Length: 181
Image 1: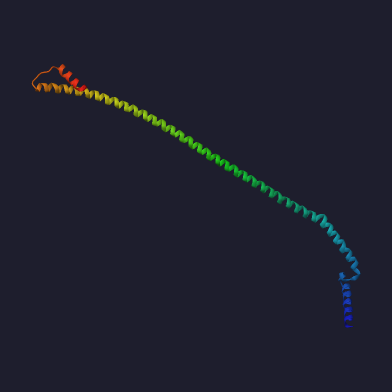
Image 2: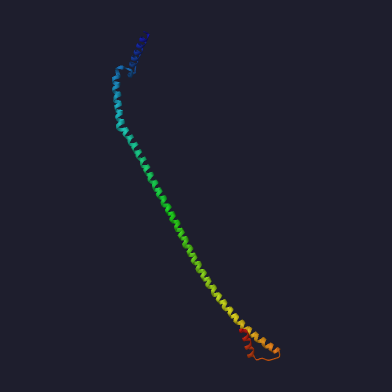
């Protein structure tokens, strides 16, 4: 029985507390509280479903679209980068080919200049050699004449030393015959 009295005291205390300022514990106001609870839940549901959730869905959709656009743009930029790299490689190969061509043309031009300078030098050397040969021939001719003169004088002196006389024509004919061979 002590439990019954104790349970009755708790109910009386709760009833007294409700009268003292805690209306949520007053069983008489429960239907009214449940009604307003349902109204509040319905209002929150409609506010969330008609205002907040569409905005959140729009933000999520926009964010997803932005991410997809960024991924597509990144793929496009990646393709452009590959194309740019291929164009760079092609331009580099073309530049190398042009450099080789220019180097070859320069070598050919230098070789042509060198050949022209060599031909000019050869022509100058040939001209100088011809002049030298001409000068040598003149010196030889002069030497032969000088030798003839010396031989004539020597022959005259020898003939005179031997005690005979010879005319100039005989000495010249003898020297000329001896020089011819």
